[in-house]
Length: 167
Image (cartoon, rainbow, N blue to C red; front, side, top):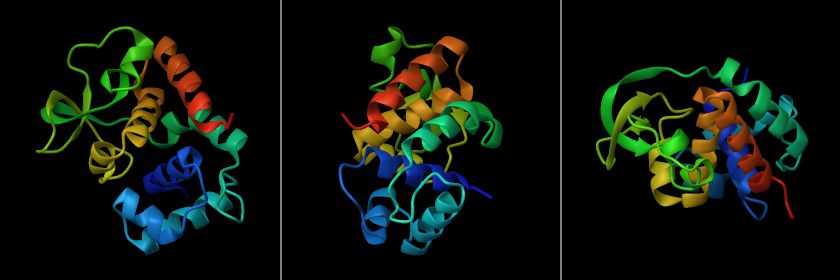
């Protein structure tokens, strides 16, 4: 069974420009090497990564667009401080043209935004987003696929397709 960190690892490998070692993946994603390895193994079994840990982009995009919100359904909480995600996140809000009020945030005391709590795919997501703008935008787009309206999901899907598909 896939876990949230498996999606985060796949997303990182898909937006990364080169092949990464488990130590590099673990360092960027703030997880242990064992967690990175386990995530890659499960993603390979699900046919989201090949045997060389390279994303199988059509499979990954299909899963993100059509299966993610059912497997990793959103859990919303109360108003809290955190890092913006979904439609309000940098990189995504520009594509939508507006920022909704009370937008979702990944809870963290270091966050600068206030909004309703959205349980992230993995606990380190807010920390990853703070240090990696590309991953922040990609993870926010994934959250928009989980929580967004039909129009927002379409924008997130197009955004991820451009980000994940090599030129």
